[in-house]
Image 1 (cartoon, rainbow, N blue to C red):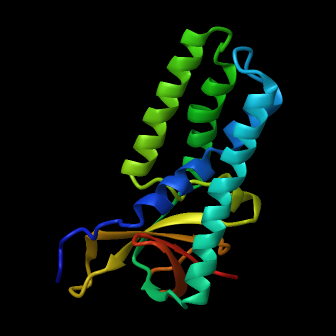
Image 2 (image 1 turned 180 degrees about the horizontal axis):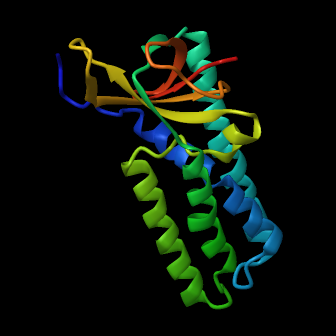
Length: 187
């Protein structure tokens, strides 16, 4: 059995997927406004940060579909990540929404903090945390595959984004590869 952790790959696509996961924040900033940034600058930037990353995500899904980049994934132990979405909403969106951005220094600190969050989401492979998936009824599960000896392979964890309410041990799912460790089940 190969115990090496597979490289996540898809670095640029993952970065755009992280930015796509922050789309609700950019929407809130566009509506609320930032006193230190005029609307004629802020609104186009926010629109770009909302649409461009999501278009890249859709393009990645379309590429996976067109290339039949489909894999059969065997389900071992499963963790439901609905709680991650709540953590995301409260830990990320609310502090940035409430941040006072009335002077350039506060704006600079917010941009630096956002940069740290983008890096952490990208580095920790949390690019699958996208509210848009939830809006369309998808759930996110971390899955440990079943090892050849019947145990669980801890080094081979992958993410399944699916509309199924739960996954069963031993079940096999055909899913399209978004990245090397994130798969989307088309329903």
